[in-house]
Length: 621
Image 1 (tube, rainbow, N blue to C red):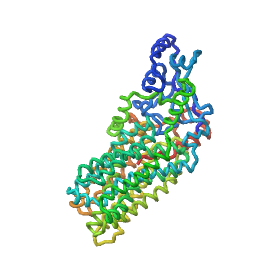
Image 2: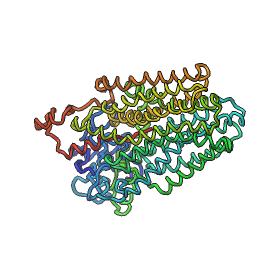
Image 3: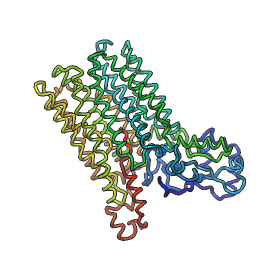
Image 4: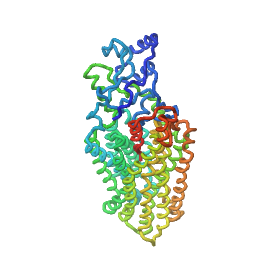
């Protein structure tokens, strides 16, 4: 529990009495607290001026020592005091902004300057997800991680019997593969919709409603009599299934304090990559035994189970939503309108929210070199993952005459590599903490690139092995073993990329991650459509070698940012470029009794807070 934050509001009322009279007139038409948050935002902004650094997206980012990218930076205005969502107070409230006179009169507060009361959690509050029992938090963690696994599984399981769709629905192989592409496109489109909705309505309702839609639209896929039905329903499923993938990382941040997240994050990080590897394994044997339609019935069974688990056993975990409900209850029971949350006071106007959620990601993608190149690299990796689903059947079924089930077994080394890298993730976090300590708790963002600079070589190594052991007369083990280093490298690369974007863009990080997710999903959808033709024209060895050389060229990206990243961030419009007090050795600051910028040396507790914050951010596979 953080206790060092100020309990004062980030806004104050100007002392101009004529202005107060004018505002009194305006406030006479003030809507009740719980009716329309944006109206309150306009009144608050007319009455108050910011007193603390803002997180306005139009300004270059400064370091936020309490950065949590899952807080509603994009939904709330720049003046919002987010301490409400970070701290626990004995009274269950902190002073908010000054109330408009009309509200103060309705609350019965007729003397002096009255402030809103921002509702917070209390110490040990049972409604705070971080205070739930460890067993229950692990249950919730495994439920959402299982959901993530099922979504990833659904994206790849149908690759086990594309030929069945071609035969029964009388379409070409290329058209049948579109059923994979439209699903993956949904992964890029959905987050643009569900991320803002979850910040306003909470996570639970988004989980439940989208999973229900996904479950319903799996059924038409399983009984489809024509390709049009299959493609339309797969597209809807892709969009609906993208919501859990978008929200799972935030749910873990809701449940676990930063210093506790290592193992839960490892469990979650593996799920999106194990799912695609297990899909062809299960799907291969299932399609051999029961046909391609059962590849959809198995999705229905799995998705139905996780929908029940999420809907009936995992409560709301999003702090702003929980506190907003508490504030409404307090207003109802006390009759006083001053019990509020920042979500009710400082919601950005709809037009501004749309601009931030829909336009800002593309501004960062095409205007920021770091975001663009990291997104390109992650797109190459994501496309590679889905290329495997087409390449493995080419190598094993066409080349060696294996069945779909036996071909699915060849994905096991990929899954083993993913699991092993997930187990190593806590060690990577510990190493990062040591480096953070050497920089006085303020490490440069480029420190996040170290795992990427090491693991990036795993991808081309695995692909070269896969390429030149894929001759029909050679053992099955060669191409299969080539999947192991590829699987091992995936998690380190994705987590490192996500963390680098977060450290580089601070409050803009959610938009940067959204840009990366969008472009990688569209690329992953596209590569499925031309992989088979590429293997036919280049042959099995050279097609895989081409992929290896592309991934090898991408290895230059982390090294380029290691050398030039700080300079690029300095020139960036949005990126965080570093603080004056950043030093290479904490002892230098201790020796002088103050930081190079002239500030007094931070005490051990403050440094510990920074180091806990410095641990791995929630990733967004």
